[in-house]
Length: 446
Image (cartoon, rainbow, N blue to C red):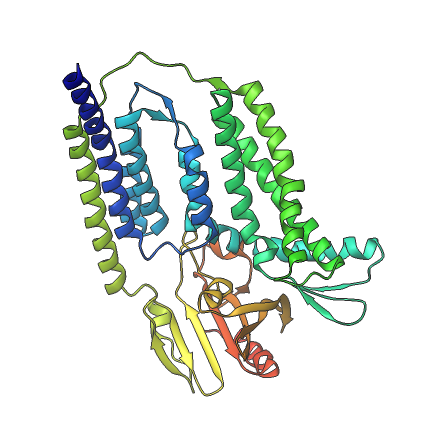
């Protein structure tokens, strides 16, 4: 009896170890492939926190090769389009595949989880909501004026009644709140499904996702109003408390009741299936290894192609009198003289990341203040103040295709004529910046 018990325990331990070999292997390959793609931040911390509530088996005794197929599709798309998020999603789907074929079928939440922790979410929020965030500041000024506090809005900062400037940190205008709000919504969805043993269908998830985004935009607006009204400076307890309470009251509380309603009204009970023998470790290892090897080969092929290919020949041929020219590792061309630094980023396709200066300067350790839309020579451009320790610089940027200049994400992405490049001018003198912007806005560079 004792020997039989020991054998059973030994078999159970071997079975569990077999089931975690493939997920660990894929995770290690993912870390190797994406080590330069991920940035430490709140998304990773939130991802670790919500993962136990998301990666739950909905149908034990069932398996599927669907994620292997989806992973292969993402891999082929990465090979053709060279967009890193596609490789990330391919690795993520391969990880989900190794879980499903060894443990049982998952629900929809793990795939949403992948998108939520992806740096692509950071990029999408930072790029596409940037003009929305500036517009929210304008609406906040209107609300404050309506309640009797006379303020003037100048983009990301306000002029208070006493003439003092109050700047709303760009991170506070929405980026961290969007990441946190979406992650907490997925957490509540996972917790609700675990409690009720029901799964929410895809149409309901889409509705709940849209509701979350709408509430987060509203929350950001009301948060800005409260921050300016109480003149709460960044880094203070009051500033953080306003942000936390705004998120709880205006987003998480309504979403809690919405999720409960949709789960009870439209949730599908997870029916236990008759047990089937899962895919053997040998077969699973063969399929997983083939896809993982393909990822390693394609990734090296794409890196070599991007390194050896001149992406923008017109920009590569562009020379500016009085400026020294340098090609940086990321493909950006740097033009520099004693008082001015100009970055011109190569043309991108509409579906590609453009890495706007609002991201890149923060990545270089600078803090962006006083971001606003400024009109120079009848062109609307973005201007901002850069600060790092005791250094203060003034910067401006726009999208330029030689004929037209714009700051609209939609306009440059859907342009059918000459593609757009980002022109970013930085100086130590604000007046000199305005003069240079006027000069370059009237130039046909391409």
